[in-house]
Image (tube, rainbow, N blue to C red; front, top):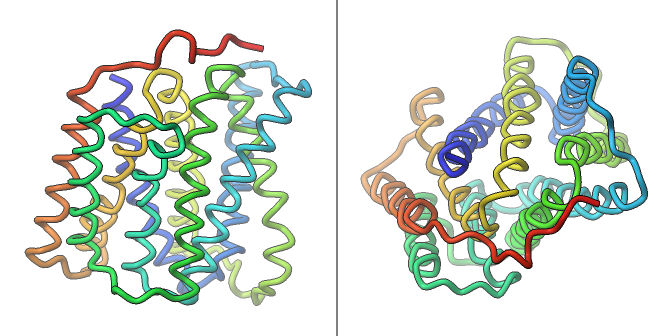
Length: 287
């Protein structure tokens, strides 16, 4: 059940690509990210009030939130800045390389997951068709993949040690605050914030639905090993490509369909057939 929930949330992550792409025709990247995380923080805060849930705010929680926020913030910033210097296909491929970085960081080399990872990388290459050259944008995006991998690894540990909803809202609020200077540096025109239908839909998908998907991810990572989470997330470019093809009219050739099929096969092999959980000594007790 947790893996299926994660796969469904990945569909929402994939939907953020065409939604963001459409919104960025009007608003600059960091300004959009600021609105997105601000909306997410407000929605989670409203849930806390309605559910009458206590917010954990001790020193250990704040330290864990700070660590995860650094990885989350760096991931989005490096990806956004990297897109200024590299193509969208390279960005999609390099970002998804967290599927390799996560098991390397954790030093977990399960044979089934390694096979699935190799199939997923081949599928990603066929789907997004990145160029062979390397530029500054590629290096920044590679750093983005490392940051997102670090975030996934941190969530595996901290969601088992702390109150997950509190960890979520602290991350959303802290990322919002960190984005304020970036927005000031970007100096977006006033018209960029006009409440058009495209912008509102984009924020609804990324700030509303994606925040819910983030909450589900944090719940799932209490039960599913991080390397399997990363593997399921490799299907995000697949959903993004399909939704962009359907809603935005972007082309998806035969090679792209083969690549997306390989990625989904890798997810089934590595994340759904393997039921291995973390060893008991890795499950941390609440602080």
